[in-house]
Image (cartoon, rainbow, N blue to C red; front, top):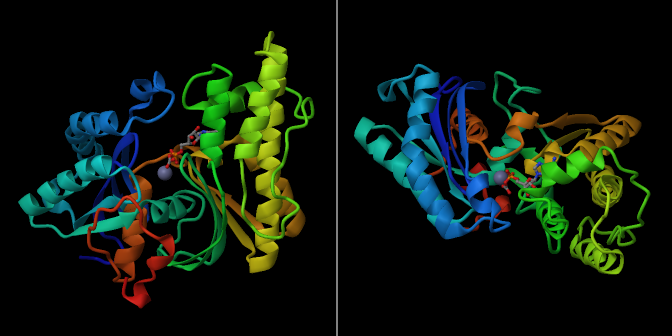
Length: 348
Ligand code: KG4
Ligand code: ZN
């Protein structure tokens, strides 16, 4: 195997996207995502049991398409990478069993990838791909449906969590707000769209924990403030009012994130900020971080929109980085895996 350009089939099924990709070193040769959004929408969130069943129905077609799109046969591959956690165990198992079956049939090695290491790698897919497949030192802001974390990245596998949400994740806060407003699921992109036409200072929603010196965040108070506002004023009666509510909510989230990220940059001394995860697609969060990093002279690298949400290309890229550094991990399915435990040199 050419460790600088291994040909890898990657599979991701940790939540509600069945995804497969073929990557060759830093190049994404195919990227297929089958989303279950429509199935879970009527429940206002992901139903784990349904997610597993949907993955089972989709996985063979998704993997076949990824191989076909890349014009790659199973025998051409150097290995198979699969997300082994964190995530919904029943959902993870579908991807892992598929990967195990293919690896056994073709006599290929199989590697486990931490879902968040995949997100961390995603910022490099287009913006910052280096042929050496290094994970450069940077501060990462991971904002997804399940996580809101500021990570000090010293190198591949060398992660230290500087701060995180004490309650709801950013994407979750958007999803719950959209639900309160009767806007559908997932709420992030919908609220973002309405917010573009609203006044961000129309309603003074709280920015929690900004007076505390730590780097943690909290969004449950904001969620309550939204519920209280809607109880008092009722549902927005016009699209202009709805836009104002969305814009004011989004502003509160983006400002809280920006303040803590700025503080984390100062504390860590990093001159690069990578923003990854589903909620990294948010237009106002991107805009505010853009202004803040420009002011500080920090290089900003947001994951391309296509790779913000869950996908397998990022899993393949993380695996490529590990293969390049000869520190591939065995597959061990777990609902929770500590990001700080992945240091290859510590024998993880
Ligand atoms: O990373 P992801 O696909 O799945 C997880 O690993 O959680 O993130 C999905 C989350 C959802 O909560 C969704 O509402 C949020 O990302 N999201 C957004 C936007 N697009 C997706 N949140 C805010 N603004 C957006 N534009
Ligand atoms: Zn994710």
